[in-house]
Length: 201
Image 1 (cartoon, rainbow, N blue to C red):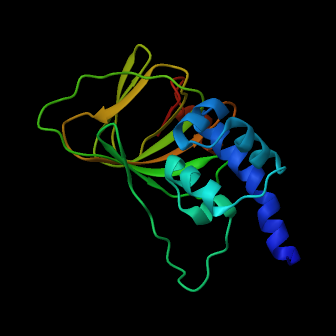
Image 2 (cartoon, rainbow, N blue to C red; image 1 turned 45 degrees about the vertical axis):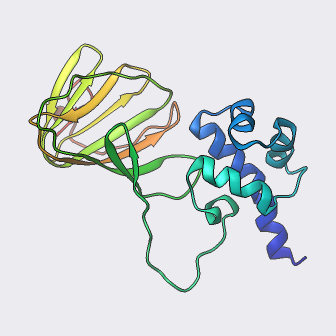
């Protein structure tokens, strides 16, 4: 086995561990979903077990990522980026970043709704930064109910109850950067134009 292949295989374990932790999934949950034993998954992440196609395929299905993402295989030939939209909670998420750890970038599309939706705030670990590209975004954050037009940005700790929706029933498009707790987006802006709410204009 050549050194390049050895390096690729050695990097699989840390990449799988970072991806699992970033998704907030335990080894026990992953074992139940994939059918791969918890001990095998642990050894795979620690590098004590070599990655095989038989082990990686159920992991790729569970994480909903291409197999190449799990092994970090370099793309060759076609330079185009093939984006795979993800539909969740009635919205469309288009992943714009490929690294399993660190900050994740998404384009998010909230479809038009004939009737206003009732906010259902959720909480989870992490920190989120968003920028409205098109439409009017309704952001419910704790006790606050805000409307953001195109060009406005917001950042907040996702351990606060929050909900995103359309303010007027129309389509909303936005960019989102999401990181684990403590990972924030650093935006250079005029100090007097940033409000205490975390909304930036």
